[in-house]
Amino acid sequence: MIHHVGVRASDFDRSKAFYVDALRPLGVVCFHEGEGVAEFGREDGAGPSLSLHAGEPTRRLHIAFAAADRSVVDAFYEASLAAGGRDNGPPGRRPQYRAYCAFVLDPDGNNIEAVRKEGE
Image 1 (cartoon, helix red, strand yellow):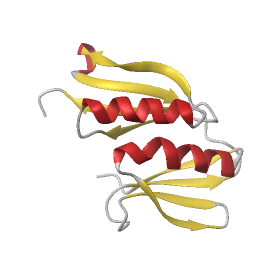
Image 2 (cartoon, rainbow, N blue to C red; image 1 turned 120 degrees about the horizontal axis):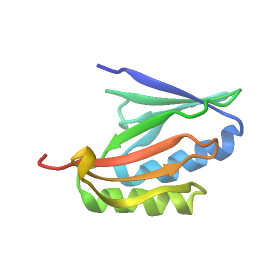
Image 3 (cartoon, helix red, strand yellow; image 1 turned 60 degrees about the vertical axis):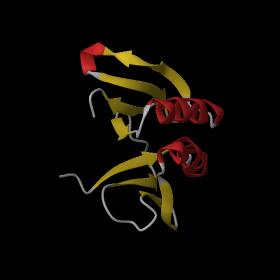
Image 4 (cartoon, helix red, strand yellow; image 1 turned 180 degrees about the vertical axis):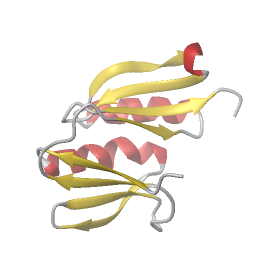
């Protein structure tokens, strides 16, 4: 349904480094980079992607990335904090969402989530 989501960053290099490290545990890579743009997704570029651009920053966006299992959610959270993200909800079971998930804020304050739906 969704082809890509675009996010603009106030400090492109800082945000790119954050996303490279934070998304690595989820198997998401930077598959294309140009002047002021980086594309994240599957290595072959197929499927949905995150498009990061330099510019006036996107604010208050919430993006959720699917995780293969709970350990991947945990690894995402730790990698995100190590990459300069800020805690916005540690890994844990969230019955209201029927999921195990974690939330971090990217360098511009966007809410980035890794989620493993229960029962999948």
